Image 1: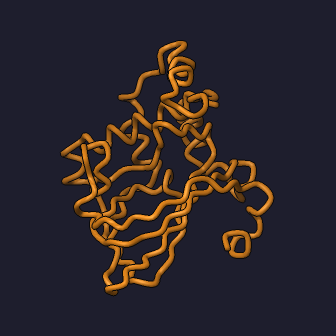
Image 2: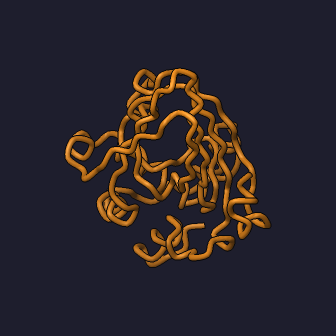
Length: 194
């Protein structure tokens, strides 16, 4: 499906994780880090992506006709400007240790470190959660949407029964790689992260 909608990506996109979410989003949390009702940009602790973009396809298959409700926050550049100064560099050898211990499935780059720290900092920041500019988006049952979930600050407020497919898109496959989180962070820091 993605290849027919976005044929430019067909040669470079890689299919990743698929999930089914039958649980009501407003009840789906076990800790503040996993609470998707909080604004965040996506970063996966056990699945580093070394700078590839997270292109995700979501489908609301709610049999009761209920909407999936999302909150959309600030553009990635604004989020990065706010949180990047708080994020230090990873400890030397730490990524190799995580891989050796089986905590990560591949080697965590400095980019992955920064994105995960930004994800966590956003979710932990109560002032940001309460006051960040945002808007609400209602996605009706039967709808499908595509989003770069590492570039779009978002939160899942409510809804049940959703299918999700993640694709990894190398920045070389993008029409405008300068808009990728990797390039935005590298421009802000003045160094290579992957």
